[in-house]
Image (cartoon, rainbow, N blue to C red; front, side, top):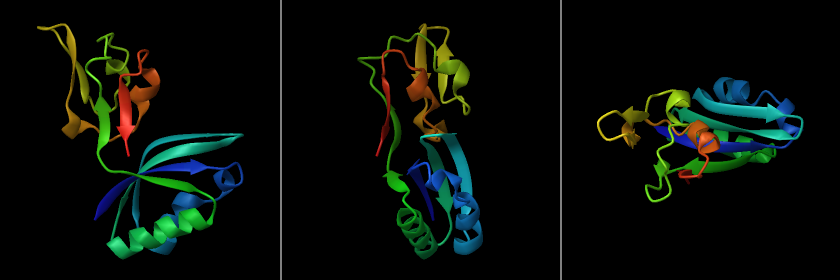
Length: 133
């Protein structure tokens, strides 16, 4: 089983070996899709793989250690009415889910390639991208 989650860390939780414990104690494969940690806490987007019961126990562990956990059910969505096709997202998309179409002059979004890392959300000036949770 695989699931994607957004984790929000307090400053105290940011100093805990969270991902190491998910791997060692709960036998999960952890794919870090995005991470931002600073003095006021942090945020991570993870893909967790393993047995459903182990994932549930791992998420319970996170919550018991003061980590906010939000599942990502559908990934990233682009609001085509808001997108100005400026291209800011294209150069920073690690999976090339966002690309420039030279024929139309528009930005295309291939949801199947998207890993919901959220980099495009921060880069988008008109805020046309959002993580669906």
